[in-house]
Length: 506
Image (tube, rainbow, N blue to C red; front, top):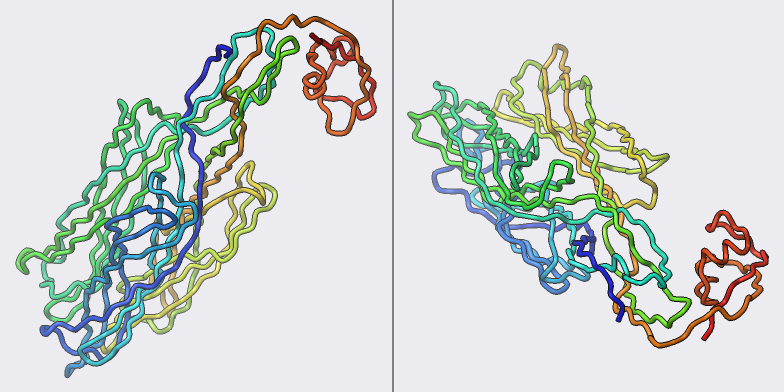
């Protein structure tokens, strides 16, 4: 066996990507301390993922949808009340080629919550969820970097790829006591929105510092039947141990809500305790150039080798861009009434790749929550938009994934029933390119053969020929064929061209 120098690289490649929709359903009884329900005004919620498992051909998600239902009560004033219900779920999703040693990345989003009144004391809830699933595999492989023999002819290819430096997962908590107005004696929490914003990464001494802001926005009811809102930013920060990491690396960081505790304090304290358990997962990649031997032979000895094909991630690039939506919308229903809150969501309808641009057609969905004579009401509205992102190297065959999230929103009620809408939507586009390469292994050489120059062969170039293929076929070398035939560019030979080939034989 020939002596070969080998190198270790850690490769990562995508096994499967898919989108799946499922429904979480359950019935709930109105607590005795609350009045009967006549009508549902608005339903919303937040998704928590307790646990994720990968089995053969399947993944399992355990979690809950923490829902808030604002409803019209069956009392003498038809007052506005609310209900908080947890819908637990355990969902199994078929994923082809899934195995327990793979890496699972999920993004579960709540599309809508439907509420059906069974009777005055009982409701049925349906939460419609969408999950983006990405299944990847990491593998440590050895590649032949160099062979310690001058007689060996090698066909090399330079490859740029993304090699995995390391990965880590950490749990952290965002905790705070949020103060409400001193004049407000809190009765019920009617709605809670949780958004993770301003994600950032810092590197220090083999540690990755993940930083973000948890934006908490709540709508609540006071004991004297007034509705008010409060908003607060809770900093999120956690260290993830990671060896050999540098600022030049590429970072892929995901945040996932595991559990939520929202607990009003004593009425006298005028505050609400918030505790959110988060999981932060980080993968770190580096761009690496490898010189890969694709083929080899010897003109003077017999060489045998085995070869295996592997799939790996050659490129992983991410680009972020912000779409600024600025509109004036006519909403006469609100008029001079107070606007409590606006629920926002983004829907990408169409994605087109053209001339290294990604063209998006989407819509911004708005739900205005405002007061009126008998309490609270909603108005739905949709704003269509177009947005383009320049992305060098992207084409119609590229594997790209896009996430769009609202990072800023501001709504100002103007005169004549108009509302000035200012919404910033952050687009994050990830481009991943997988390639298949051949890895040479188990190289053997037959020794004790006296190989010498035997003759010249005349050969006419056929379609699909390269100098390498011809040299290997006739036990010659690319350099010798090029020298004898006066070929300057070894990568260009024409079909029908006559070549004189020095041939070795035993």
